[in-house]
Image (spheres, rainbow, N blue to C red):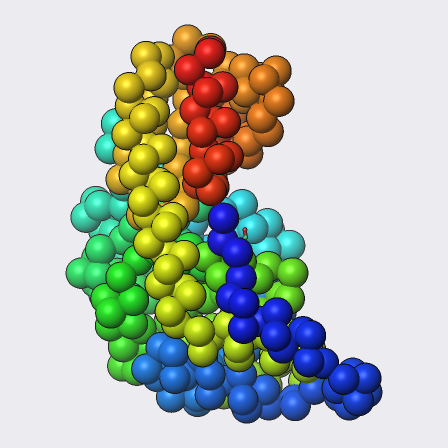
Length: 328
Ligand SMILES: Cc1ncc(COP(=O)(O)O)c(C=O)c1O
């Protein structure tokens, strides 16, 4: 569904052997400029990474010592906890709840701020929109947390591709005034380029200066940089894909709501959402019908609730999923 820009294929086809011989630009200047142009920020606010995965791994190494605390809102992307534990960090859990469709509300924000003010708390992990729920954090609550937290706030926005770029770009403005925040973005999701491993962090120039000191000089390859630049410049393609996926998500959610027995976590603003069956094991039921979905039955914060995560695909695949769901 998230097919990459045709402009990226042109780059690939026009590659010459000589392009493969030189080391990449260690400052990734052209890549930073392309990111800066796309998001209306300055290149000094950007640190490129080998997928956001690299930053998720590096940041706890920079920020945490053994026994330090990191706040995680559950359920969320498992890598935050994994990267924290690897550094010997203590995970502080703030739970969202099923009755509220796992929304990040005012009470969640208040708990996060309170926890961030406890001694030895160095990181707050946020995911916006959240994986696996697709729920967003409103710009007001995000601003509140970043302004009031006494810890470094990492805002993973890898799934922000379906949101209105005008409003998400406005949120990035917070990095101009706050040094305790880093926004993570990536070409892996809506832009359909997970294979080239291009992500980046957006932060205050002083924050970026520190992170850049720890970045490997060649963490993004020449080839990946060239492809990424072509994708970043093709804003029309991203807009087209965004509209297609939003339409498909609405279609899928509306059709699912007509099928008895299914319960969908509504409100997703991403290309993913949680789904379960009220009586049956949905993962097994779909598996038996030849459809493999992401298994969240024992995910942290969702234990024994029976959820699977659905990813919105192209119309053919969505129809295949719907057919299987109707037969359960
Ligand atoms: C919430 C979230 N953040 C980060 C990543 C890592 O993405 P990348 O390909 O940019 O490393 C993923 C991958 O699935 C993800 O779901």
